[in-house]
Image (cartoon, rainbow, N blue to C red; front, side, top):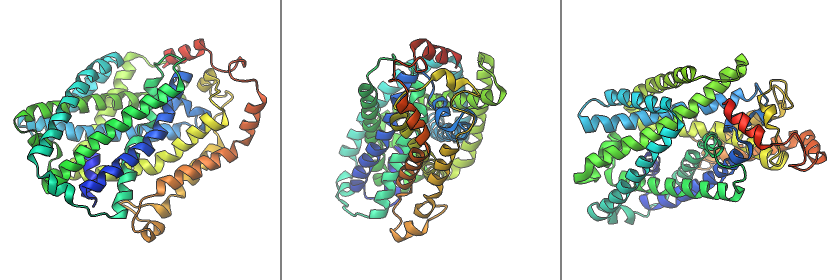
Length: 438
């Protein structure tokens, strides 16, 4: 909802925010959904699979970026969850953020199964509150005047598309962490299709509600996002706050869980450690929570601006990784990997892959002239009136360069037996071992 509100705050009308939201979610969701098919096939977390492109140690680079995503979204969740707790119990938002961090940490430590059991409650409650808020906006608000404003501005529209695409693309590092629990024979079309439908539909609906709320609320929304949304609920404002708390608690728990997996993979890669015990896992989760809380407390005074900068930063640095990962999976290796080799320092994927690093660095650098963010506006973006297309350039360049630099791998894969007849390709026992190791 806050991401959708940014569309209006950055200069779009409520009416033109809706197509920008849908287009951005669909484009970003398409690439994110492609990642989901890797989970059932390989049976390993998303960022472990990056070792096939970047090498055993080289994958630490995308792992660090993924860790920044987890920590950043965890911090934004603490800001909004802290606002909800503060409003509900009449305590400062900062104190609410501290309580919220403790709750998120506890839920992450007790484990994956409990996370999903709790998320069922959050999903139902969120759906009910969403429906009530949408009805309230259309019946009690001055929605006619808001939707009747037809002003169109190209640059904010394109920037809005980029922000919603960024919101979707940043789920790329999360995806196979969860889809890997699906049966290995899950149809690829089903995995991709349901991921796309759920993510794009859910994201588009919530962002549209946020855009309408921001258009109605104006400065009131910018000052206190959660408080304003609760006010729209009228007499059910406590239920709205409870939905925010449950929803963000689920999201924060998944972020701390995914962050733990990234941090553990970095440390175990460097230390040569094969397994992570419950006590060590708890320490990692607590450390991620502490860092996220510190960021949340520092960023809460200017949240919307900081959140916009954060989404754009992720967009610039994660799209080249996504392009490299998908090109390798679908076009270079054609879904054929030796999973056991992903866990070996000196295995067939090597320690570092120079081609992947060249593609990634050039994919980031090529975006600079096209960037349009509060921190920097590139010369080409300025010529385009501030339109934000840098991430599309980075996506194409990084993927294209990686494909060109992986010619030897493509030739080797073309010369090897078809998937399923090569003893080095995935077998169920290998996939299960990889899951148990992590």
